[in-house]
Length: 580
Ligand code: ATP
Ligand code: MG
Image (cartoon, rainbow, N blue to C red; front, side, top):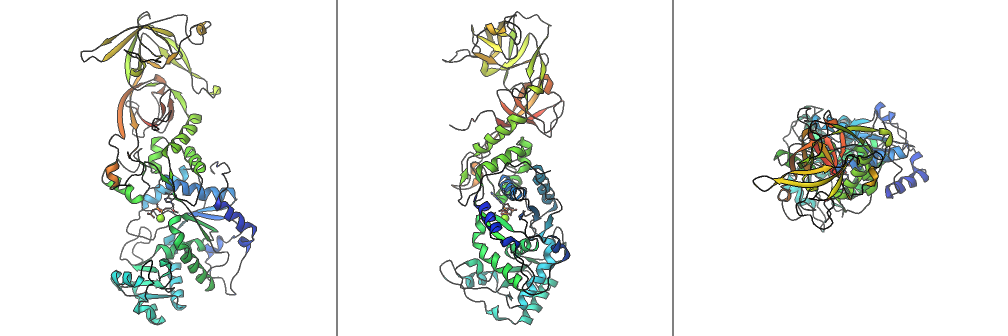
């Protein structure tokens, strides 16, 4: 089940990989003269000539369109180079992680079209190994237990312009460090009393190298390891080491980790010197994260939208989560096309949401069957059509794919047409219905408008017309009628009432939160439910089915939809209505 990703454009990540292949670096194995300390599981992954990437989500939220970029990049590279991409749950923070998120992440990656085969891993599976590495680093005088409190630690750390100072605990003896670290593990100390730090350089111009924290005390239950541990490794201590344990060749991450790369390299280098890893060590490469206009892509803020009920849940079709996108009707193919089109770069930028929508239109145009729906119905009465009589017209299921055939649509004396297809006072250039004008009923007859009727409020309720019996589409002579307007309709006798949910941007500003609280930028009109009339052949549509409603756009059946009460989500309009 490998997704079809067209060979994507060349980019700096691929140039770096090509370079590593050419230089022979990936075939290099060096053991430092010491016996292999790899576990059986780790040996299974030793195949350094092969490109290995990983997608490393923290299971503390649902995946969003930004993650899709990272997924397509990592899995795409593995596919292209005949390599392997691991799915690794980076689950080192017991407070925020949950199995609900693990399941949804698996589903979303699969839905996007990627397969990690047997290569599913959890950082928490390495807790034992990480502890062993920590002890080895203490033994090698490369780590120590610090007992400054958080505030003192901050003071000793220095600033961007001033070097830090050594903690008074930095010179603790190896034995004292080992004893304290073991006590931390056994849960003998309260949270915050001690931490384990790497002994690097408090004067380094890179703050990440000023003795970063490797372990913290947390008396918390973990979603996989339960109460086994009272200490948890930091992201920096875990991430690079997990990459090395899995023999990842290229660890691709977002730009905010650029300054962490020297630490990433330092740690793996030390552990290699100690005999735990072999060459080649993984190489971290950073790219710019996706920023999408009118969209929030921060897990913390997305959680806030759900918790404060600004949206109806993680899978609300207005959410940029992959479950939301899917419910909205966005296709995986469209998302892959999008990530391919925007490419990868080193420079932060904003991508316009319309690029994503254009990709959806392109993907959905291919895959969607056509149906007719009248979104804002008013009655049309054909005065010279026999009451009680029904005729059959034929509409193509897909105009560009003739092999998909045609379907029957019925026509009788009373039809539903769009309110905007009639005008009492037609502006210049209006070719649709107004008294005296002729138009074609798409796939049916040419009609001439004869009059209209209003209700007490002055709102037009019914439009009247006459039809030309020899003008039916597809019959000889029908072409002799030359009309400029062509309107769609459904048979009022045979149509089905349904709800359509129209979605608009969730945020009214291009960069939500740029000038204050992002919540203030929510678009109050991002969702509108309307009652529509759809053609009879769509009556049995089931959840997830996607159609093009002619002249309107792409719509998908919502999972909450029932045959007796169909609900469609508007995925995207046919044309861009947002660009001014
Ligand atoms: P957190 O703030 O919780 O760390 P995160 O969005 O970084 O949030 P992770 O689960 O750590 O979430 O992300 C998994 C992977 O997806 C990481 O490699 C991260 O770099 C990548 N990623 C996250 N957001 C984006 C984005 N907007 N564009 C591209 N890649 C992203
Ligand atoms: Mg992250």
